[in-house]
Length: 91
Image (cartoon, rainbow, N blue to C red; front, side, top):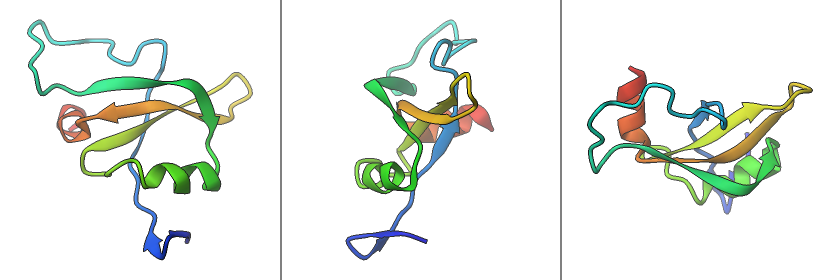
């Protein structure tokens, strides 16, 4: 367990392909629909990076977009905004 400024670290992670994050979009896109925001450079998924990003992402509204590279190493490549809608989509 890790803490950040004595708070428990809480994050949501979604394994999602950065090359095709939305393979079957609906015909009509609504304003509140989830979107992926790509980082300029992917971050290696480490305890340190997760702790840092936990302060920038509310797990009820955002999710870290994670995928693996050719060596199988997990990378955080962006964030999914309005993840509550994305979670509904997944369910």
